[in-house]
Image (cartoon, rainbow, N blue to C red; front, side):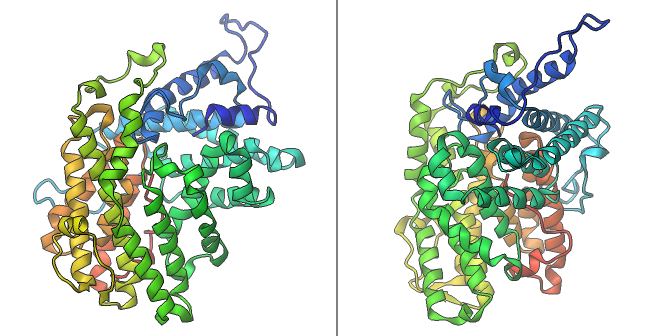
Length: 504
């Protein structure tokens, strides 16, 4: 989303909205209704979207926009915020309706095919307004790109990245690749990611980190033979910058530690290398061993304690007085046991750890025909995985990691209704998708497939996004194709209709 700092940077490049000076027959100033809509959507964003962009919402949430400065936002960003907030409203409203697509057969808990829905299919008058502001954004971007001084500006970069997020919010299969490419072009033209994050990290950090996450995580959803060599290699440049711009995922809706995000980057790179003559080389085997070993060494309880230190010592999140009364009233954090919150955070950390491990095991070991791994598991991880063998056999390790992932996810979703705004299951999109990708299509896994689908459907409401529903559609295609031998990661991603982005 657009931070207050981003808006201040953008102020110097694009015209901000100004109230009209004439009085209409209805006694409203010209432009009054547009400005009232913009302000109300900023309030909605602060109250209902911003809290879900971080692990735990506090007064220090960097995504919360100070409404005193709302006029500093240029038109191109205001239009995107209106589109994003209205999309969130419409999806949450529709997700409560009986007409919202079902993902589980209520008789036998067997997943059934899901028809992909789009915003345009919802009978809500706001849909027209959503697309009006989205089209206005595209027009404003097109006009700005024609002006040399605006073409690669902070405002345009922020608008393109925000537009990319809105496209994903409306569909995992939307036009986000176009916007990702445009953002990459702007960053390249301005000297690259590192100079920008080092020189303007405090002003454009949110925009740049969102781009970085999209660049890394979208590669997970691309078959190895289609990975762009230059883009995949450039991901390695993010690793020394994670401490600066990602900070263990504390302020982002992909709450993954630097250690695990680095392992994902290196797994992407190893997948690229496996497509060439290095596939059977000892050097690649050693690289894979180092990646898996790093994932195994991750300390979930320690990460959880570090993330919660600020939360337990900070004041409650602020809320605009005009909209505070409209919020639902879940149990406040103050009345939720501190141990419960810590346990949730540990389960979330483990879910990301096991999802990262499954991605590594599947793509770097199983799909390369490797039956054993030379790594030594930590005693705690071995206990979590119920793994007691001295020689690490890949197949049982994979099953143990999948079981541990599902266990962590179940524990998070078991407290969905009792933890209020502190509930962390809303951040499990990517682990749910990885778990679904690795589940067997047989009858024995039917219950877990139903669990994955149900959770993803509920995420549509929690996140105000249709992407989780698209993930269900993609997973059904994966499960249906397993009988045809489509069991490798790449084979699953090559199935028509599967390729999208499934992480936020």
